[in-house]
Length: 353
Image (cartoon, rainbow, N blue to C red; front, top):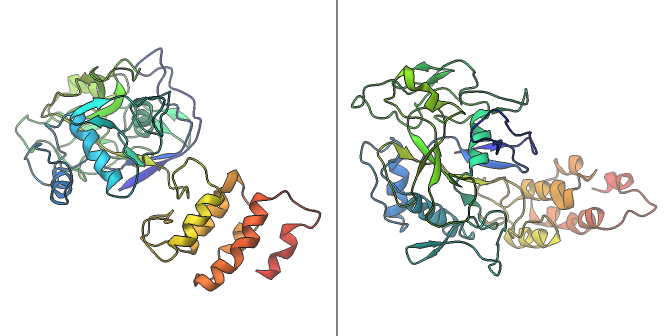
């Protein structure tokens, strides 16, 4: 389950860690897992033919731990390949490598992540923004529970401004992923408390070395109130990519739900062609991920195409979905979106649709 993190181009947090990097500013919309990855999720991927990862064994709904950054990256790669998408991380056998300038999807600003991947580990900024930023006030909270006051420590639960910390080491370690404290302003759980989570980003904030330590944040269930600084935006930990620990897990991030059906980074007529071919099918051409490529996905494409909000969008919302009806309007709408406006206004023809 994902939550959407929008509010593109938010200001960085000049009071957060690390400084002077000023984390938290993200120039695009994305999604991030509402919950941490559980042991059951790892087991199900293994059963479906994904990477066989031997993590912790505290219970199916507990956050998985005892997993390396490299294993988390392979888990994410399987999420991509099993859904017809490009891998996020480059491996040569078991060896992690940087993407190079000649590779399709290479992003010079982040040689770790392929730009065509749909699923990935959250970067330092993506993780930080989802945890601490409040889009309604354009401010950053100290805790990932929408508060600047120390959350109440609980062993489990979902009450606002609670977090799983200050518990005995052996008492219910840690909480189930859906019972791990109050939510952040964006709706994520347990970005403060329960278990540490790995970031995609190097601890030094420069993704330029395959074996350098990766960042980690979030705190852990057994630290006391005296150690609550570990739950805040002011503390960041690290672990080597091949290291593992019983207090360290991860969550997954993903691209925003936009109708870039061919995953080339642009919403254009090429995506419309994919949608036409996929109409009535699942996966491809399914912008809202409801299991079917249908008229709702076409409307999403029409609203996003080349950044335009075409005047036909509102009237199309009520159009029935049978292919002979929907496909019959494509040529006109495509022309309205992509060609230079003529003397005759597009909106003057609304009654024809």
